[in-house]
Length: 114
Length: 254
Image 1 (cartoon, rainbow over the protein chains, first blue to last red):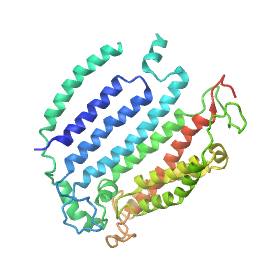
Image 2: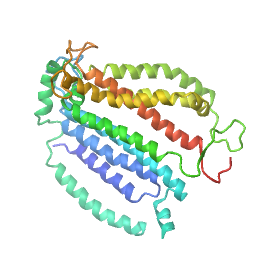
Image 3: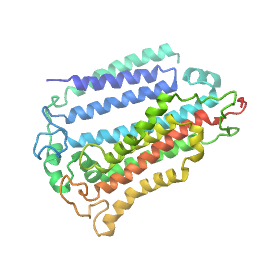
Image 4: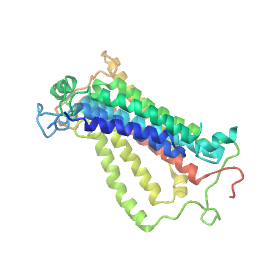
């Protein structure tokens, strides 16, 4: 039994969360969120992987060749696109937060409001 | 909550969540042994049913076509969101940093970057179009090709002066591409309804697997998505570049 890819996914998820929780810079926090999200890519692709399977593209190989699951590939594609746009939106918010507070450190702009 | 306390709370919670995750992951099938059945069924029937040799594209744009339409609108909404969040705020002015302005923030571009950027531009745009057009045959498609096409615009920004390009960039054309890309997906879907079939159901001739003109409506959807993604990412790039290079806050020395 091999659990390493699953363990890598779990590790990326937790290490990214740790980064968000302890982040002192919003751009860093957005990057940590991408790390959390990349754990889902690994988990999805690992679930659909078949040993010895090729990519599910039958242009050069005949139909019937052992191939990995195309459904998780399509889901990962969706995941990546949504992740990229969410990052862009969060970074735009970070730009505006910097304009209003003069800092990207969540600790510092919270204490100014107190 | 102090950072130290928050870190300790997270370490406890993270240890519990990590334990639960690992426990749950051990219940998954062994890595490399695919239990099926959906992937195997699709790999067996998709090429014959849709004449698309890229089964991932067949899943994304045909079997799960409605989901992908929702996904395209997530992208559309996020681009609109960025444009709204970064719109000119009260007291902000737009000023093009002139060549001799004291606070000119745009650093000069080196000749190496210019030459490399211009040399890469043609191949990158061609590769992007190739990826969009062959999405139903080989790895690629509207999403991937669209991002590659947007990289072409980034190369133009890198190898030229952004402020100069800003005066000539076709904003209306990019907005039009963004809107028609988003609308194009729905239009292709309505094609099915107009022909008396279901929404997004293929009504075009399927052709032969491996041919450029095959797979029914999948290449059309790829084209719409490619247009939408390319225009969307160009808009995102220029919004962020505007913030750095053109927008001035009140009180800033100009």
